[in-house]
Length: 159
Image (cartoon, rainbow, N blue to C red; front, side, top):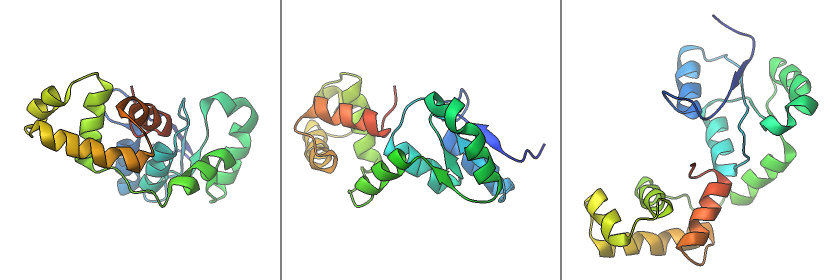
């Protein structure tokens, strides 16, 4: 099937919505995809757009904006909520977390100690601490808990 517009959630059982967008766009480069997440988050919005989504609209705003968004995207224009576009631009110059830093932060979010994180990732406890020292300024966080909260809010981590 080749729909005119695909409405995509980011949380799916077999693969992430962002990976699904990449797969669809690889096979069908002209596919028009609108992402409908439950929560805003500049990191996940930017990743979805980079993967090839043409629109980004929160599920909570579907009744107001969905028809207009579908029309705009169908006409070949990208459509991102102004609030989300603002968040993306606010963080576009930020240093992104590395894959390893994200792995560390995901384990911090799960309540694991530096020692346990190190054991799981096959790195020393000191290396975990070094990663955390790098993560905090990248997220403008003062401690581990705040870093996790910011990462969740921005869509860098999800529950």
